[in-house]
Image (cartoon, rainbow, N blue to C red; front, side):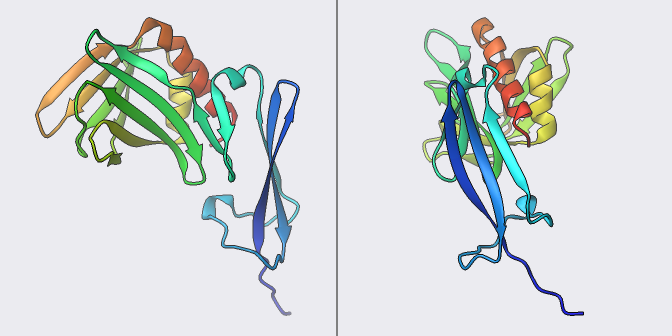
Length: 194
């Protein structure tokens, strides 16, 4: 019995209907332009179909852009003080879901720094920065499916910025107006898969 290797690749199409944006991913076999498919998207089903819909109010929290599609949250004001602010944005691309924490006149982030989020039950969510921008004002961290679900379900209360280099811990109450925005945004990312 002779085995043939099948190449799968994705065709992306964005379709906008009234109040709903749908991202369609189709797979096809044996294309002349077949590229190596990332491991997490490989399938053995040649008719595999994946639809990603921004609906149920998620269009207020998430924007779809680019080709291939990138899902991006609106900026969320995490901490606001008279002289500085910290903003959070969530992005999902072909590499996964990342958080982008931006400092406006606040602390300069270091590669070994960490973000900790606490909910009202004092349960901790811990994120190590994976990458820092050149100016030190933006920190990037990975969000897995479990973290996204935790943030969606939790009533987040406070944020701690931990600087390992400076041995410094800064604790802030999350902005009241941003708590629901953050929960709703994370719930949208949770609904839209890992």
